[in-house]
Length: 93
Image (cartoon, rainbow, N blue to C red; front, side, top):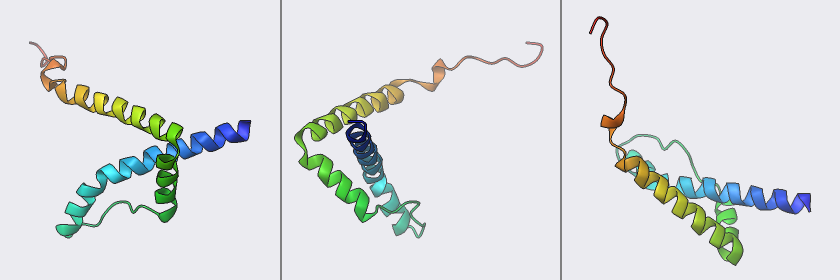
């Protein structure tokens, strides 16, 4: 049972990490086009893990929900203006 939970968590974490890498791929491609080295490469094992996650209906649904949470977090972060940071004052003001 513990092994199964570990394998599911490991698969999930690998899928999320791979998805983050895939989302960053356009930036890496742009860097390569500009002559800058890509910071990370996606391995065949990581791709296989993502495919296994997508093929499993329950794991795919978990991944979709996690992606939705990430989308909401990114949108909330983008909507938070920098002006809401606390105002600092110089010495003696």
